[in-house]
Amino acid sequence: MLSEDDVRAYQRDGLIVVPEVLGPETLAEVRKVVAELVAASSSTTVHTDVYDLEPGHTAESPRVRRIKAPHKVHKLFDDIVRSAPVIDILTKLIGPGLRLHGSKLNMKSAHFGSPVEWHQDWAFYPHTNDDILAIGVLLDDTDLINGPMLVTPCTHTGEVWNHHGEDGRFAGLIDPDVVKDEIGRAIPCMGKAGSMSFHHVRALHGSALNTSDRPRNLLLYEVAASDAWPLAGVKDFDEFNSRLLTGDPVTVPRMTAVPVRMPLPPPARQGSIYETQSAAKKSYFGRAA
Image (cartoon, rainbow, N blue to C red):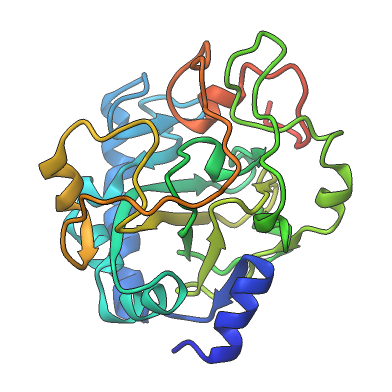
């Protein structure tokens, strides 16, 4: 599924899009599960361990902007990241030892889906090496009008920008004036439903409000080389190893000379990236009323 040219493109740009990795049957099953989860969100009016809610969410009109850790919520999401086609791609991009760092399902409903400000994933979870990437599974046909993820090529080999606010706390976003030129070079991750993007952990990216009449749901997985250890530490070694996708447990982290900024002190508003970024005084993307 992945050619040598694709691998070279990822190494050069820090980004590739692989068309239609998921088949129609799996997509239909995923959409059914997502619809059931959204419907079930009517039982709460506050963020939970499963749901991050859109502003304006009510029991009568449920609005969900994120399903947290979907691989823990439903077996289907765990099966997808462990499927043979995905493992084949990951092995060619990262190597034979793979660990799932985490997952999330960002949901951009028609007309109001929340934006995500410009950031690097690396700022949130630095490791001992940066053989780490994020998979973006397009659950809907995605084009320029329904809020695609935007990624700036070649930023994965450059600096780690400051993601802290004026109060000195981690804010989860970069001052857009600082990365104005890089934003101008960003390209959209578009394709048919079932396609997958793969972007490096240090690549600059963000996404705009969905103002279209179509949804744009994006299932995200963060995957690391098994010998990349989080600098914040490992609280539960058994749980850490339960997330191995391939390979054996590793007790000798691989150390490389990579730039690091720790996400400390923690943000004033802790939670999902939406909550963290909401404290910022400056933003790039428009927001829903």
